[in-house]
Length: 288
Length: 221
Image 1 (spheres, each protein chain N blue to C red):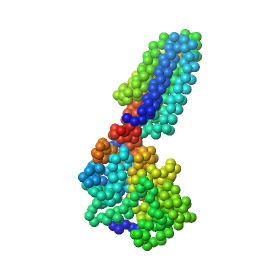
Image 2 (cartoon, each protein chain N blue to C red):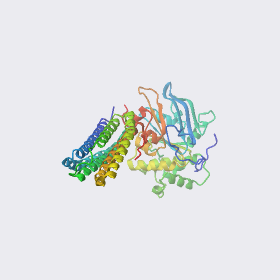
Image 3 (cartoon, rainbow over the protein chains, first blue to last red):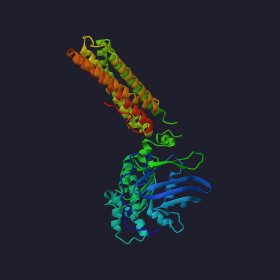
Image 4 (cartoon, rainbow over the protein chains, first blue to last red):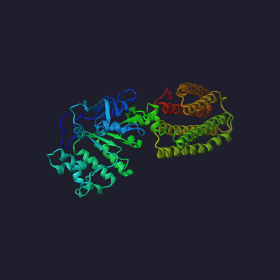
């Protein structure tokens, strides 16, 4: 895999076509006209000998928002972590099957997981800024990477992209911990953007935020999706319905059974006319 | 099974829709009866009671809005509520058509009918049957029954043609009959509209089940 370029520049994808909903979403393959950023093929994930995700085959369209929904314990976050090899940081985790990033095997022997995590950034449920200044939080990644360009510009660009600049431009040297929860989360997004990722994974990015801060994050996601591929795990179905282009529904039969992909499709189909009864039961709130 | 309260609300909403349907059905039957039996009191009752139909429509719409705002319905739940919204408008308009027939009855007043009514009551019976079966198919999620309702619309259209041709003959034969004959064509037209709106309801029944919006059969009017 090529060295991660450390500058803010949209990744080189083809011109994004309009959402290919087609005349009949039932017959059209919605992914056929999409550039594919990530893909799993028969992915299985184990913690020790315990199978937690089984036979996941799905595609993540480039510069779209893909939401992963499903009940607690179905493996949503596990799947998300497979996309940037975060699971490897957990003791005993292993995978079988394939995860492709831009068509290349993400788990190939010669791929450096650290570099993967630069190109595929992650934002977590609870905002986790470093106990440093706002500026240093954003500059952290590029500095480690030996960024040679104008760091001030990069910090400003990243904060602007994360829709935070106007709120913090006069106090960049103040501690990031003084920001509100919503601002901290946008700072974490700015920090992820500063290392020029191509994909941003978000694990329940708004679940610790108030409704207004949540909507700001959602607006930001829509804006970022013009240049970045976004995968979001959310418990909030309305959020998935509002922001995603594609939605994947995972579930488990419970009792430690592995999570499986039940249905994947354009969100309009998933939320108005899902094909699988289990999806219908889950999104209408009649699950379990 | 969770969402017991919401399920109850959804069922109640559809019960209310059925209630509105039977009010409309009664209005249509009474309107044609008032014409056939020259019962002006009954005709005035139909006109007066249209207010109740309108009020019921608004109450159902209000419930739909409340459920949309508070329950964030998805998938089939969402389709049911949207279909109820459409159907309640159709039913209310059918009530207006019944009122139109009753008003014709009042206009004719004490004049004797130019001919005994045979095809108009037949048309009414078929239209009412379509309405009833369309609502049944909606409640029972029965797409086959809904399709049959739509296919019956051809028969209504044929009856409408037949009535029109017959009344035209009366008008040609005796110009003094033109006024009442014209009124009677209005009645047939109202019944044709009622049947056509029943097919709309049947199409909503299909939409609730399949999520597809489609015109099943097509009226020539």
